[in-house]
Image 1 (cartoon, rainbow, N blue to C red):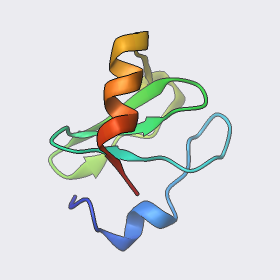
Image 2: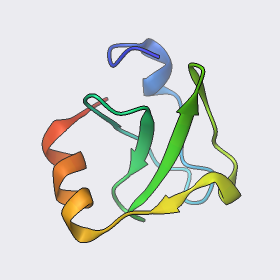
Image 3: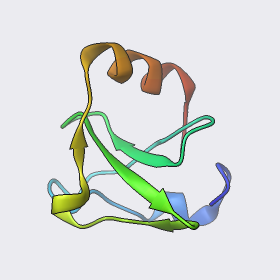
Length: 69
């Protein structure tokens, strides 16, 4: 999944239904409101609620600095 993929505009977090961002250089989609990251495996976003991983405050800041989408 490319950072400029139009699919990023319609994908949403399965928990709060809000938009996700793609941190540059990482195979994850990120929900900054809940501080959850969802993996992208073989180009496919894993958007099940159980797939979300809580991120640290440092990672949260880094993800927001490099986010696209």
